[in-house]
Image 1: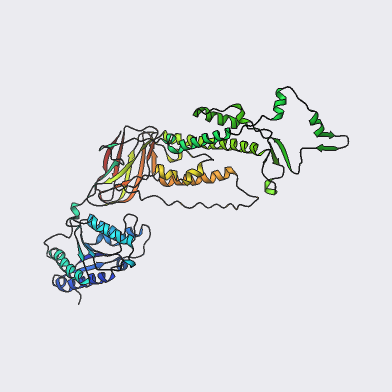
Image 2 (image 1 turned 135 degrees about the horizontal axis):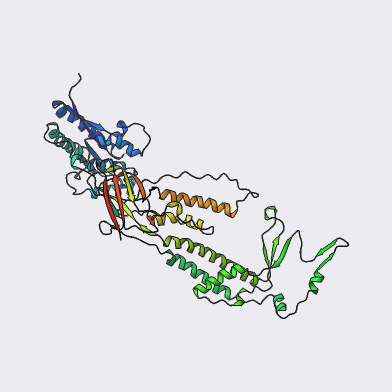
Length: 536
């Protein structure tokens, strides 16, 4: 017949998939408790497991959905580990670990057992097994909520867990103790410097990429190319010598080009309109200016003979390459061609270097501040909003950050420059920000054919979009411009106790304010937390 006034206690069963036979024992122990102690005292323990206590729901991370549906409402938990640790969540190394941390941070009892039953190690995932052992070491000697037991087989668990259930729940049923100490647990949120500066202070950092190994190596490589090119010494163009000596003769030109308008006859000896136009392949003035400027800055001597390319000519096709024509070709001796190509390569390397220096110089001019959100309390917190008061016009907004030039932008994308420079790094003491948005993929609808190749400018625009996407993903906060100040707002879904989480990006300033004040509001804090950091 129905039982009235029965008090139910929810017990979370949180175990990886390799301990199913031990889970069966847990269920048997619960049933035995309910039949004996529970029935006599109008109480029962209800086992809660994701396979039976959850339902399909969207709108959040999978584990967080389980937490909200039943995990946080449980009165106690049991966790059993053997060789597997479980599947990582967005916050922890496994769902079981997250559930354990949720319960412990709320001051609730966790029965934790590690199985020592022999197993064929050839069938064990060693990486998973190591995680189990590391986790075991983490909770060794942690006191009431961190105590664990080892069991060698299912009967060993049955004996221990039956006893532990009675020791924990019977005093609660009899009214001798509370189910948890959650009321004494609370979070303690504050903003700190990432680099462990003096308490209440934040360090101002600067990059120095212009004096870094990358730029220095590029400069040294260009100097080597210049020195190599010096080894080829060529004579000036023959017509230039004749011009200097005043020996100007246009008789040959008269022979080579005869125009007979009267007979409608056009004879051009050196130009074939169906092949190419040929001209002298002299070094361009812009190449000379760029190379001489670089050489002067680094103290590399270059004399006038460096620019001699002999009697080298260049032929440009009249037929579009898309229609079967070739590109420009050099005509002359091999050493003339080589010297011209070397000077051209040097010019473009210097142009590339100049782009790097222009971009990196702007980055070096910024002031960088790195901050973390810390929870120094004894329980987790969630739905956290952080406001940073930054003064007026001091912070650099993401849309005002420089974009690399056309020659270098693909290199910056490939080296993941934005992630390396602007994204906060995870360390053993600081967790990575977990709220980065998922950027939608960009779809290129262009169909490239031999007759529809993108221009260099079009390719550059596509690369700029990729670069800007990486910026937008990292700088995922809002800046609100007030009349007297700018306010930066960041949202975090969750932060566990005794944890520091980096802000999504470094803060970039043109002028750093003397202080940054902050406000923090959260789900489990009844008051708005206020604080201030001095910039040092």
